[in-house]
Image 1 (cartoon, rainbow, N blue to C red):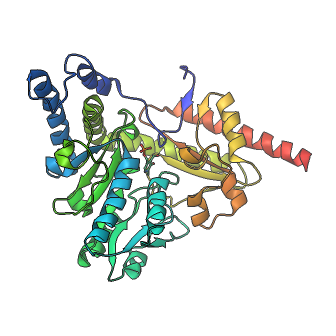
Image 2: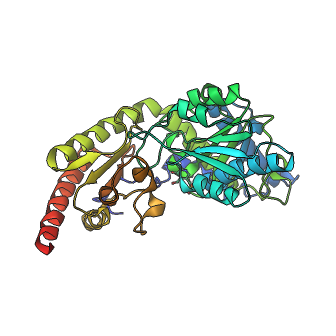
Length: 389
Ligand SMILES: Cc1ncc(COP(=O)(O)O)c(C=O)c1O
């Protein structure tokens, strides 16, 4: 990235905040000990880990012991879903899981793997705006349902789901509820009591902290068959020496993000609205995907008729602008986004979609340049395809 480059892919990842890096650095060098060692260097690292666990628990409004450190949300989602399913299988519990069609692949592929082992899965379809109706979840509940997993906010279209309402339904039936809250961090409250969830996943690199570290909140009493076996770390729930610098960075990053939530959200919302209005105003035959009202402050997802999203992306890249088509993990594949298809958007239109996610450091000037570049690119690509056809 050069100084003139414009980064509009904060849902994919974010740069580490200099203050976060500063908090992490001592744990690579002077405080390098293994937190399970009993001597001074170990205790020093343990103090950092304990601080991070307490800080994260404070933000989630839970007990420190309810926070399990992981390698990121992919692991957290897998642990939550497979862990609850296998615990139930081994204890003659329920065999049925409810999730939605617009979840991240870390959830969808986890439930698909369970289906191969005879678990039964109900996938709830969203409405055309990308929202999951709590009533649809209630209607899907069966006597053998053991888990409901519905994401808090979508990574592609930014829609915010009514998690507290869905949790209330789960509770009435005594069913565990998990939420993938990765995209909500820094934008929405992560208070697990307000949300009413039993399990919640986060990934640090989405809030200006490092990659390869995350957490799974597990409410006391929630029963799980732990997936990663070995040493007794994380109160014998997730084996493996903890990534102490990463965990300290995660706690520092989430503290800054939640503290600046109102201010950052207002700034991002202003940039988001400018982008949406600017693009829709300048580019004919373009449409916003996902609810405009129940939407993350940083997310723009627009489809352009008659153009390939990948072609726009390449053009933007040549102009120093980073964006995404569909989810980052799907980039490079020619499959249209499963999220856009679930909204009822045609394959062609889904292929012509662009996701732009703003961050705390983007400026109005950058947004205006992005609008210009996108409008020019779409027009040029349309003219080229008109020449070809
Ligand atoms: C909603 C959501 N869930 C899970 C993940 C997986 O996170 P990670 O790749 O950090 O494990 C992502 C990352 O893009 C995401 O956006």
